Length: 154
Image 1 (cartoon, helix red, strand yellow):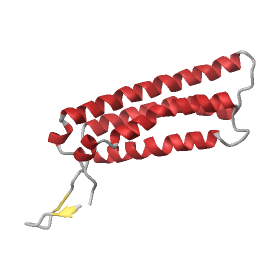
Image 2 (cartoon, rainbow, N blue to C red):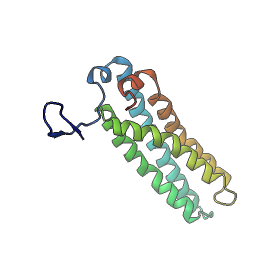
Image 3 (cartoon, rainbow, N blue to C red):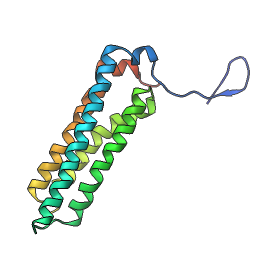
C-alpha cells in the first residue's frame, strides 16, 4: 500500500502491465505461442500418463513414484493455463510466477529423474520430453515484447 500525496488515505495498487504494450502484435504473438505450448505440454503429459498405464497393463513394473508423477504432471498444465490467462490479462504477479515455474520446474523434473534407481531410463526420457514445452514458455516469456509489457518492479 502507498499513501496518496494529497491525503493520508492508503491506496492499493495492483501490478499490471501497460495495456498498450499488452496489445502489441509481438506481445499477442507471445501469448498465442504460450497458450499453444501449454496445450502441447498438456497433451504430452497426458500421453505419458497413458504410457505408464499401458506399461502397467502389460505386466511390467511401474513404481508408485512413476504413477504419482505421471498423474500430477497433467494437473500442472491447469496451473500453467491459469497463469497464462492471468498473464495475458496483464497480471504482473502471474507473469513472474509463470517465468519462475517454467525455469525451475523442468530442472527439478529432470534432476529427480537422474537419481539412480528412481525410474527406468525410458520414463526419464519421456519426462524430459514432456518438460520441453515448459522451457519454450520460459524462453517466450523472456522475449522483448513481454519484457517491455512487464517491466521489472522497483
